[in-house]
Image (cartoon, rainbow over the protein chains, first blue to last red):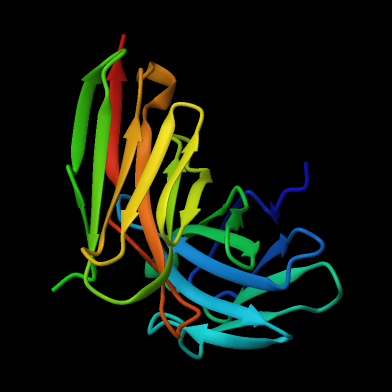
Length: 110
Length: 109
């Protein structure tokens, strides 16, 4: 059964460093999403992506964040200069109605 | 005011009990999702619905668009159903998903 995959499963970084979180969506899906969940809090929408451009983004998704589909399979979330408060689980999802979630990347910023 | 609320926040049930989790929202939506988040953090989509009722195994989801309310029912609950159940929806005219705060369910043998 096709599934969304994410790498790495856990990323530890120093404050101020850039991180790139990677996702491989399900191959025939056209809509892609990034969400984050700070420990103990609810899941929050970050950004949606369709037709090689951002279709919607939240207030959280500021200039420090960017998304890219560098090739036909990967979908990446880049955080340019990480802050302590960026520590969270980041989920990628793909789909066009029903969404299929990846297993998440746990980002720890020290 | 929160756009989406869930009740109860926490629920403990005995194995075999019938469980209902409620979700109320205050905006126009194009579809509502019920998601299950396991203790390890992974998220699984259980249902997507925009009207009526859907059933999958022991799970039933209903939605009343006029009343802006949805329910998730679990029949014959089992300890493996222990998880956080989240309702989330796509706002009308927006490609943005709003998540509820989740209901933490614990089913005791």
